[in-house]
Length: 409
Image (cartoon, rainbow, N blue to C red):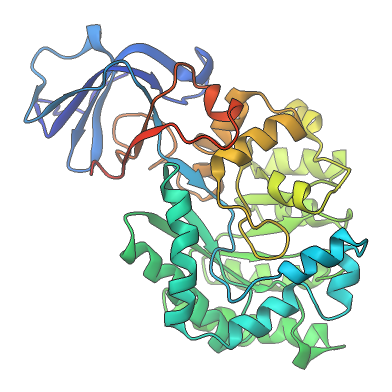
């Protein structure tokens, strides 16, 4: 791989490494068996086979990795990490036979978390969120997306996004925020979904955008949430504000979410268990990433997996994420999500690892900065005590992370 134009002296050189660069094409996992990687000012200055290293490359520090595997830092591109309380009682109800939709229509589900989140102050939400974040960091996550969506009014949504931004200060991790005001109908708008969408469009979204708290706009198109036409109004405002969009689409039924995401050139369409071929083809034409969420599929005991074969056939990139949330995926292990994607959705280990690196970066609009080991990108790395990259998806309940490096540190 080509070095930066002024390679010369670098801050650090890692060598005697097996590099899973995760670049497209070529060897599976983009493997370089005897590789080296150089760091300058937080970015990758050079990466490639050790035998091809420039002769004038001089490092202030040289580190022998002893043949360990190196991958890009992991990216969890879909989470609801900041929330108040828990929903363990609903878990018991589902085990007794109640469906997710039954619980939601009875005032539980997202509405339950909204009540608990509104009652919590920022300090409490930060304190409750840090252990969840730390669990992900311990497995090599260097970038995370965090959504709002449990406030459902201007103050509540602003509070959640401020806490999400604060997490990126409290810990060495890159946080990308998504405004999910159109997540569910709050109790004060019962029977008035169009009025609530108007509040999202006219009040909440402009306020959080003006405060610089949001990197993208998300929504939930579903029978228990909002219609594609209602979400079109939200996305039109997002476009006017210059914000990219993402969408929870076709999770419980096929409601036109995939087509809507494609219409607006969404960064990602997430879940997609009930997407049809027309929707998948639309995503392919739009260049939208499909984010698969096996934790929610497993936890809800769903029986219809996302159409992985259709996504492959149409060339739609597939990312993976934990969907960490209190009601449908209380998952804080991205490594376990890799295994679930392979065992439940039949992804290959190479597809799964690409899903939490290269494609996850694209789902956040960060493909130019993260997701592969290439010169010029941020030096976010994971060093693993494994023999093969497939072991990261193969093992269950085992964390082989030897070292996590973010921006060279």
